[in-house]
Image 1 (cartoon, rainbow, N blue to C red):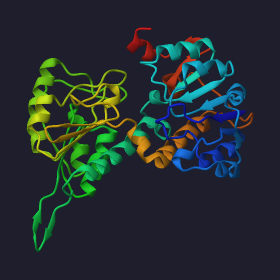
Image 2 (image 1 turned 120 degrees about the vertical axis):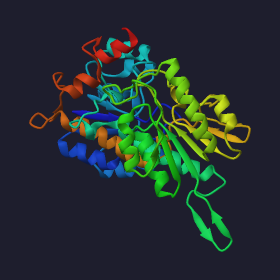
Image 3 (image 1 turned 180 degrees about the vertical axis):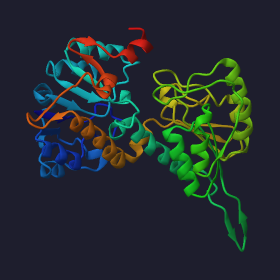
Length: 378
């Protein structure tokens, strides 16, 4: 069985779905592995290392796509490239199926069994396969380091003969995987950290990391089966933003990570809130690619509003591409290994398994995923 990893089509995507280490593990399973020349170059993995791990390094991308039984990558394929895939093969990557209906239709028409890594259930059984969590973890770390580099003051308390420098104040909105890692990283750097989330259930996790959980009485809130916060009512948003304004006004760094699974991110930091913030403070909008949490943030750009820098970088995990690739490649390997038939040395899809049923989007010429159907109305 041939597993092929092409180079990413998105010029802004430096990550790769296979590393030399994961290649070696796939080969040990009995798989034949091929990679496109230069597949890991932007994450510092050279072709020589892939060859040493047992992979073929292929120059003809189209031919390899047509031969592969399983294609693995980070981002979704270009719609125009789907026709090059072998019918009834497996494609595994982040697909964004809620917003990429044309791609989903093309994959179904080509009879591709398309696995969407962001749909892997957040369950104990699927922890090693949970690519969203692995990438959010790295993003939480990377955002704090980015903020520390952009801030003109230091993070920790420092007492010297010249005087005392107070610790930076960091306010993190959204205490999911990215937010919790951001809290932990900011605390390690010595900042004074506060965090808010619409889900009171996460307060204990926030406080266990040494941060103060900001309480806002929003009435009944909750989270989805995937662990994401549910959408707030207009009245709840108004209450939330009133508290956000006070906390942001005191902060040196604000990091927003609030996202709704499969839907546009909520606006939590308005223009009025930004205008109240201190000169020289920094805001990082992790949700900028899904609509943005911060009014005025622009994907891929820095925006300065009255002395406040709003950072809207795309693909923050890609800013630590080697580590992000290592973790994602391990998620991909774990998915394949979980459903690998050791006797026949093939990757199988057990549609009765909760992992497959949750993450398989198209199969046998149809779009079959119930979650995607419920969100998109397909």
